[in-house]
Image (tube, rainbow, N blue to C red):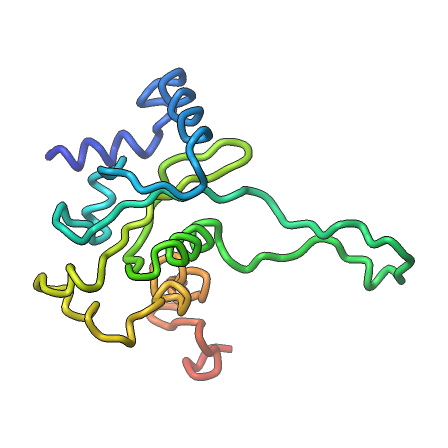
Length: 189
């Protein structure tokens, strides 16, 4: 097995493999950082390279933090009938997708390629988002598609892996039948 294979095995159970104390100190360090911070090197090089990161000019890694748990509205000040009293808001996006969108807003000249998990505690989840600078990266082979203007904001159109999952495009259903974007068009009932 190569280096990346060993790394991916370690990250399957990080608390057990790295040690409880080391993992706890890592989470404490993450909590002290700002919500969105650019990092020099990927924390998980195996995962970053598998998702499209290259150690070349124009590729960035940004660590983003998102809050866990549901969303709740404040209690209404005046009376409501029970039907209208709802306080819990259903968020139809994953924490990973929300992190990607926040990073895209902070770095508008870059394009989000993908992201991966790096840690979580009882309150937060942290993801590292892979960004590509359109001007610099489009000269590399395989990344020419970044130069076209139609690719701007692909994270907001659900084109990343987390976005496709939230759109239901990664569902393994009845054989090769996909249930989304339309059940009727794929002949399923």
